[in-house]
Image 1 (tube, one colour):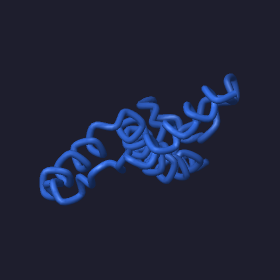
Image 2 (spheres, rainbow, N blue to C red):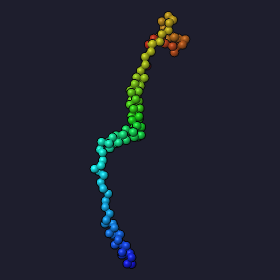
Image 3 (cartoon, rainbow, N blue to C red):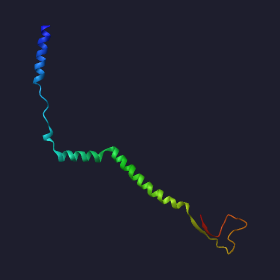
Image 4 (cartoon, rainbow, N blue to C red):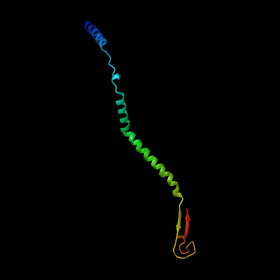
Length: 101
């Protein structure tokens, strides 16, 4: 019992002698730290992936805007034979003239 009391007194006094860590805040080089943060942001793989996805989406928006015009077409069909009829009666699917659609 006496040994336990002596051991606890020794441990109690040894814990009081311990000191906290010294601060390293004064040793920080802030321009270098900012450079490292900027490099990390620049080279972060997810950021590159999101940037590529953003560029792809921007390209698709331009294509999608242009595809509205695909529904409207105009064509001129010309047959060099001198028939005056716009529709051929033997083949009614061939036209001579302007087609809008």
